[in-house]
Structure formats: structure tokens, C-alpha cells
Amino acid sequence: MADKAQAQTQAFVHRATQAYQRREAILHERARGQVQDVTAGDFRAFVAAEAGLANERAQVDLIKRLAERSRSSREQAERALAAQADKMTDAAGPTVKIPAAKLAEARKAFVVLAQELTPAQWLAFTQAYMQQLNQDLKALETAAKPQ
Image (cartoon, rainbow, N blue to C red; front, side):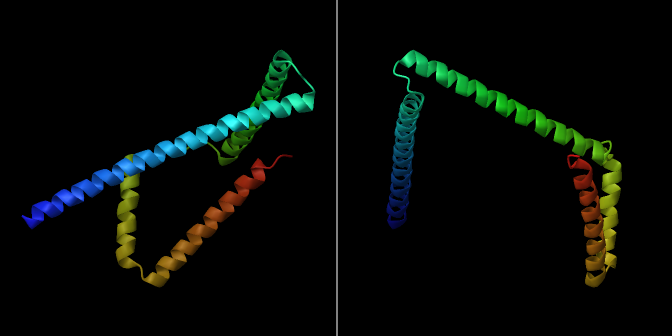
């Protein structure tokens, strides 16, 4: 009987906690919406004050011009990032696809190495591997720098 009461109590606490969390999430969402509404109103007031525009149509036109300028700047940045990514891709060379069979063989080789190498040998192997990766990354960085 005590076990049943304890289980029911735990179930009640669980349901109450979930309901509280839902209410809390709703309150957070409402507060966020209010902040966004205030911010949007502040922005409109700022634009009107800064531009000296009294009527809404002029404000809307200014906002559209600002949005267009923002969009064109964003697109320009995206094109620059794409060009940079292309440089990085070209510097890295063609993409290599490793066949699944070769990958399985490499895994087996690492398992064998794990059984045969001492911890000191593993550290030396890892250090050499990381140095090679570092050299390759530096070469990619050098190739990707704008000239």
C-alpha cells in the first residue's frame, strides 16, 4: 500500500513539475515577444527620429532601403565567403573518397598497432601524426590567404 502511495505521489510531482515547466516556457515566450515588440517600436521611432520622417510611408521607404542595403551587404559577404571556400577547396586538392574496405583495413591495422605498441610508442606516433596535420593545415592557410 505504501509503495502505491509513493508511486502516485511521484507521478503527481512529475505531472506538476511538467505543468510548471510548460507555464514557465510560455511566460518566457510571452516576455520575449514583448521585448521584440518594444524593440521593433523603438527601431521605428529611431528611424523616424533619425531620418526626420513624420509620415509612415516615408518611414516604410527608408526601412525598405535599409533592408535592401543589408541584403546586398549580406550577399556580398556570402559571395566573398564562397570564393574563400573555393580557394580552400582548390588548395586542398580533389576530394578523396575512401572505400569502405580500405577503411576497415585501416581500423584493423590500428587494432593491431594498439596491441603491439607501448604507450611511449603510441605517443611518438601520435605526435608525428599531429605534426604532419599541422603542416598540412598551415599549407592550406597559406594557400587560402588573399593575395
